[in-house]
Length: 269
Image (tube, helix red, strand yellow):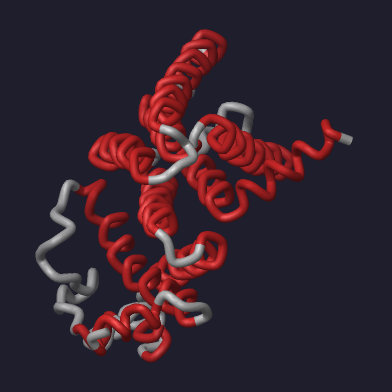
């Protein structure tokens, strides 16, 4: 075998594969930060290169190494010394750890690569919704298509299940949204949430999507009740459902089979 091909094959062997996934995940996480900042503003995610929001100086390649550059610069711009949010390295590290977890669970396989790409999409959507209460069509609609195409490349879910889960998730959220709008007298769930559930259905299938929605709803309910208990919110406080759906989706990607088996054990005795 050619040395280059042999070297690549070595990357697909544990534990090198897992550490390789971590490194790639952090690099992709750096791009995710760009998407989180630029997509809601309607800016290109390709150009121009990243700049300091304080002095507008272009960030050098050496200062753009995921996590390490932030630590080396003590969280400040090299030129103007303005503080750089700790969320940037946190996103990079989180994406890397998710990739590593998926590499451990799925091995060096095509399903692992597809799951990693989908995980980054969920992370981007979660943080955009947290910041702006927005789930852009430019992400959710291609996400649905990606899930359906992925079902052709690996199972489960089958293409039929993926299609039905996407359609069912969208319609279920639409009905819940209409009922909530009637009850509260105002919009409660935006159409972005419907599309995000459809995206989850297309990629995960029916049961895992239900698990992701339940996990996300539980997290949202806990936060909402906590805000009410602390006196910093009310029953009408708007929470970013997409953020919680994304967290539920990530948990399902990482531990879905184990969680479903654990839940099913209560009914099987």
